[in-house]
Image 1 (cartoon, rainbow, N blue to C red):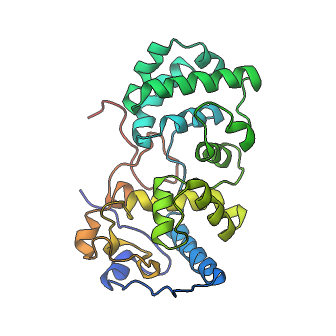
Image 2 (image 1 turned 120 degrees about the horizontal axis):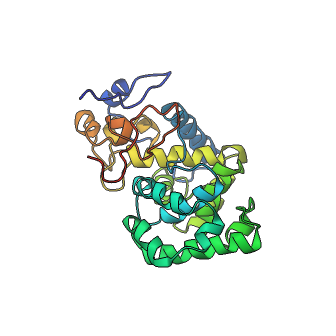
Length: 283
């Protein structure tokens, strides 16, 4: 099977970048805030060229489906959620339907996502709250969303940014890992990370920045073995060398469309260059 090139860029191809095996840039010990902002924004511009199609990787058709899918995505992959939600939403298409669901039946439907008992409790609770307190509609304000059972700031920002067009920074494990590798912050607490990054980037960039960073973390800059030798932003990365630097070996580590494999969505956007993911149980 022919592999897709790792990235496309208007400046240089991945092969050319990888072949140079760049050394990590030297970040001044006392780097000023202005210098950090410039460096971070340059990385974001480079990621925008690499992932012009970056998008939320959960399948959804309305704010309620995105809210439910995001709650289900805790401690599992977006792929597994996307394979599970078609049957769930067929059974419970509205908050009113879900609030009246039989808990045991729901548990069986969402079992593949793990922690299905706790997630069932959250879904029943948030659906009842939407029905009773918000007229069956998902609210478009962070302060309202975080009051719903099972909904924290990360989930609220996902929904606001992708269902309502309200800018938000999604600090998941990938986002937190990468911003620390890039020395944008050394904070570990997601709320503190969000505050630091919000100070570096204009509000208009928050949602797309989140998508780009998470895309990069899932495809190239992995937790255990980042594909440094195939990374298009290697010349900008102060942590270059933590992973595989040999270009050929690094290319074998690429995931999803970067490695020529299916993505996580069963119904990806029209401009997505990868292959749709298979349905649950498909060979």
